[in-house]
Length: 397
Image 1: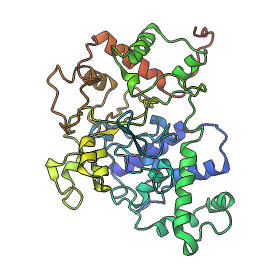
Image 2: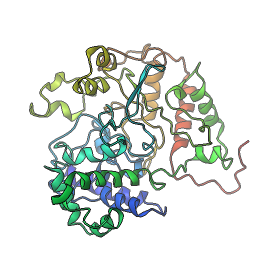
Image 3: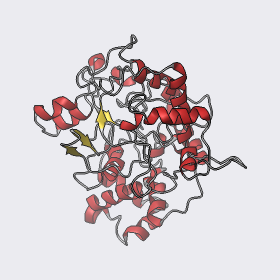
Image 4: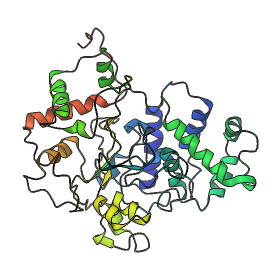
């Protein structure tokens, strides 16, 4: 029943979130791959099952978001350990690197950066290919089987129109064909359909909308380094060439998020989760350790997860729809996570999942009033795509 609800939810949100944006042939191919439910074993789960357009290309099932935020794969009894990150507004994330000036790791994809981009030169492409072969997600046994299924699909001619005759011949070069599947999905995820920059805040920046007083106060607090300080990690100003802000700096942080007791990963069998209830998510530090980095490198990154974009952070099909926030879905409302950022160190919150490396300089005791917290939430709600300016609304100054 849960799997049926997941599939139905993703289909419904696809219909609601589809746009009339003109897509290139490669973007059209990527879209076909993104919504293909035959690329899982057993069939039935597509990329959109965990990255629904109607919620900003993140988890599209309210019930799952409300109870752990983690999604089952094509085998409905298997769950991963983290909520789905947004696949929109992610295409500018660079190949993972360490910036000695900022003393921070930047780039990569997934919450822990493991789609680093080091292999294919593009983290988004590497991320797009990850779920197919993950037995907790789409559970396909091999690259060859993914390519074979694409070769049998109705859009196989489109694939060859984009990549050339014979490009789906898994006998000749299965690795190249598989890579092109990922690059096509990444092309769609970079398209204007997925990243329309059509929020009220975008209209405000173009002088086509006026923020309400509470929203304006929220923006001021969001930017103010002495108050909310949100823009330290979620830049809100246009780039040097007028580029719309992405609301992420692609870095990693341990915000002191508590473990989520509703996470179904804790109850997975030892073959999936050998630590049981004692499981702790190491984040970026775990990936660096597994990659062979010395302890002097990975130890200081334990518990850090990628700073997400805040675009579409509140996009939902209706007010009753529940969204999950933070890497493990601990929070289920914007109000609760903003209050946590404000009061983590001065109210009796549960202990951090990873006590090392907690950011205690930029959050935890911000001193915001309840009205100021509400103003930041009001501003965050202006970041949802699909805004239609009110007739007669004066341009902002």
